[in-house]
Amino acid sequence: RFVSNVDPSHLVATLDGLDPATTLFVVASKTFSTLETLTNATAARRWLVKALGDAAVAKHFVAVSTHKKLVDEFGINTDNMFGFWDWVGGRYSVDSAIGLTVMAAIGKERFAEFLAGFHLIDEHFRTAPLEANAPALLGLIGLWYSNFFDAQSRAVLPYTNDLNRFAAYLQQLTMESNGKSVRCDGTPVNTQTGEIYWGEPGTNGQHAFYQLLHQGTRLIPADFIGFSQPVDDLATADGDGSMHDLLMSNFFAQTQVLAFGKTAAEIAAEGTPAEIVPHKVMPGNRPTTSILATKLTPSVIGQLIALYE
Image (tube, rainbow, N blue to C red):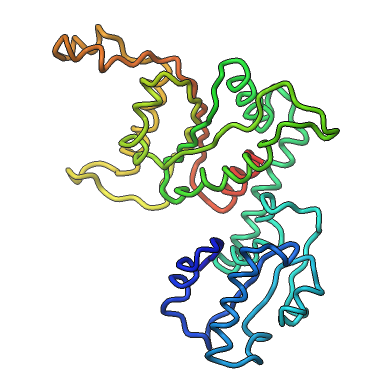
């Protein structure tokens, strides 16, 4: 269970049903002074102390931080502090000690696979020529559409529900990084920076906002993320097909129509009433990038994060 929001309802709901005697809190804060984190940690400490007493804090709290003194002042035994470099920014930290809770959840073997995925893309980025360098090309595509086509946002559309929060993850990664208007030397930039990242998993987004992608007046480049093999699969309604194949058929159909559109003649040929035809025309020429992997694994998640980093 994770808590980040300073809204008290978040912590109350997270603690609901937990036994203080069997609960371990991991307080992750680089400076150990972040208001939201420390407010929640202090409230959690009160919850624990009320049930088990002050002495329990040292045994039920561990810290991930760079600030030993503040960890000690909070009451956490610094032997139970996991340190990391102070130059690691929060938005780049999941593959550092900050990822301790991820490792606890998935196990050290899978976490090692996760890190290996990061390393694979890091090495690709470091060594691949520019014309075949996936992170560089993805970044240049964003620069191209935002600066030369006035595209203000980028939709990220993973065709797997296991990545339902991936667009939200990328919001901090990209918008906190690029949401700036001055250079390192303090002079203003003369280009557009900071695309707005948003999205939902397919096929949920298809029933929410894809009409805007296909027929709206704004150009919205979209990244489609799909997998040839499912993590889980079930039969379709008729019992003969694969739900994963159905999911991926939507993936390919959407990218095809976004690219090539659907003309008035094609729609009329389907028997659509003449007065409805203009409302169903899709002009096409809407940019998409398809990112395909064999299967969603810890390594592939690491690769995806590193790709966008």
